[in-house]
Image (cartoon, rainbow, N blue to C red):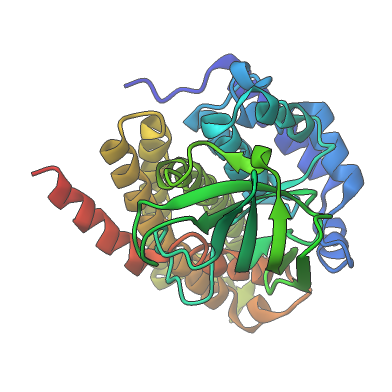
Length: 378
């Protein structure tokens, strides 16, 4: 298999990395992350103009990419810059609309790609423990439309989103895969209340509550009760995006640590000359290459059959969770006490690496899922 990126992807990676290096320095990122909005509308507009959002979608949806390696290239660059703008929501909500939407609903993709609509997937619930099928939010028919009741938690950039793709149960028990439906819910819909708060690693998250929220018949995304497969597709792309973002953050932490080892002196010697630290750094470099291999494998499998895709993304998320935590810990320890200071970007990379493990399923969840999916092969 040829793992070399196409010329278009290399150009995208170069332009995006250059833009982030020039326009998204750590001080700028820190100011954006701490702002009331949790992201920059101006940076978001520039991402749209650069084609960064369009790279996440296929030509049929109005984009020019949409493949696994397109997602990986974009999010690795975002991870290097600790970018907090809501591209993860665009990937997952956009994929759900692309996979299940009718012609009118797919018209929303042009607004997402153009940066005029910020979309978010609202699926996680209190006590769901990362299980996609565990949905307690209810949707009941009311005339020609629907009425939603329930709550969603930890919706990334939920306070800034214009549109939500919401999962709700229209039939079955709480843990059944069958009976889950997806709905398009504009942020200004009556009956939707939102609690917005800052996230520990930058940006913002929100809790959504639906209190007899009325929707028209055109809000249903796809076939009633068959939303689980669409959720799997959307979340698989989200997991790949997070894994690639983590890889970019690991590379940045590695570079910062190598630079520190080459400049910090102790007892009159560069600490990078100490053999024990060299061995630890060598082990870290090998682990990061293992993480890259896992991301490549997931990117290559993202459009494969369900079992191949899901096993690949769960394997990658498990590896990324373990290695990301190791890179965070080792980088800080190799820096010493200064590694924990707020002023040093490394501390923020470490927080992001640890928190990525807890988004869309931690390493324990994905290890168990990988084993369970393996049983389905036999």
